[in-house]
Length: 128
Image (cartoon, helix red, strand yellow):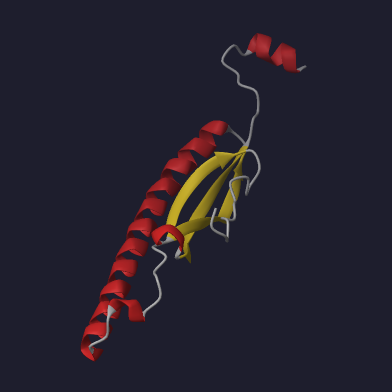
């Protein structure tokens, strides 16, 4: 029946669903070796199944805009926290090395994939 359908409907496309997955990159300070090194974990935040690739791509674009906004907000929050910590140090006459290294801001991104969570990863916790 499938072949007959494609014979009658020349513009038909095979059903190929996909997941739209939202990820968050979470940075961390690894250690002081070689002047300091940082890593990141990638964590799945949410996902949704779409029955066609076209639907998934359209949703991806909408989610991408939200991810960019949230990444910008995370950057601003990180900068504000760093500024507050510098003000705290200045008010007490302390040097910057009084506080631990910072890791950076979280970042969000979106992917279309066959399996949700396929892009999750955990960074190395030792210097390589």
